[in-house]
Image 1 (cartoon, rainbow, N blue to C red):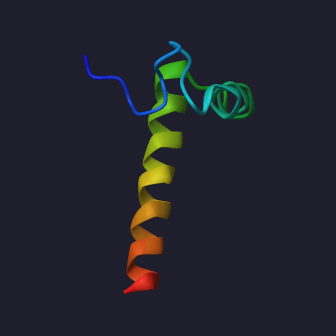
Image 2: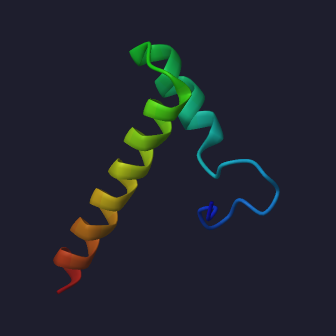
Image 3: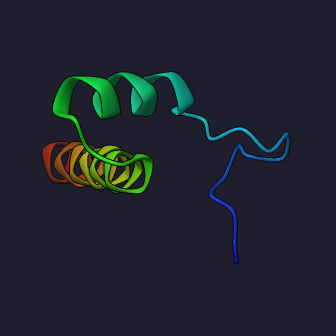
Length: 52
């Protein structure tokens, strides 16, 4: 499995945010991580569109 950038120490770069999302939304860690990563991708796409 390929690790996302910034995970060389074994901790996801959004570990704290994932934990908070998991608790607030009462979802599993996998679902929380997927939602956070999806949101990050959407934000990056929006920034690219804005800059173009």
